[in-house]
Image (cartoon, rainbow, N blue to C red; front, top):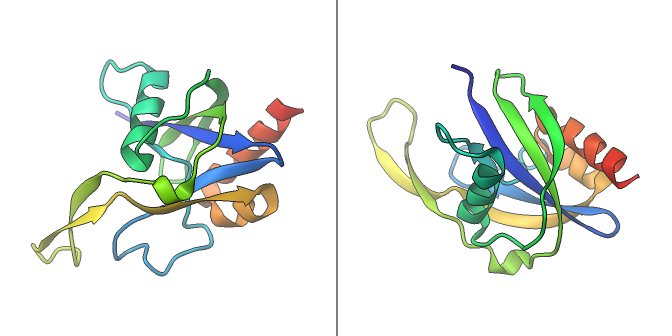
Length: 149
């Protein structure tokens, strides 16, 4: 069954968008095309909006209040589909508190390490966000621009 994730593209006037950088050694030196909107897999039977809020909270530590607006479904090059929502709001990146996950590192070594799922977050104007975002998530910015008019 194909993997489906849900996430929230938090935005504020400018417009600026809030993006997160994955934690761990694989992503440590990757910046351009290495950032993402906070997102993650939808659990079986879980509502898409609830999954987006849960994932945002797990990666950032909180979810700003307000209604989510569907931006659309975006197929990634690896086959995953991302259901993206927008949310107008604000968040201080200095307050980011991510959950931790266990990974095998180095790959196929049998050694397990614990890393933060997200190591930092930040606000970016659309031109910079377009460079920072994973290639497959860049069309989400276009959907936000269309939504904002």
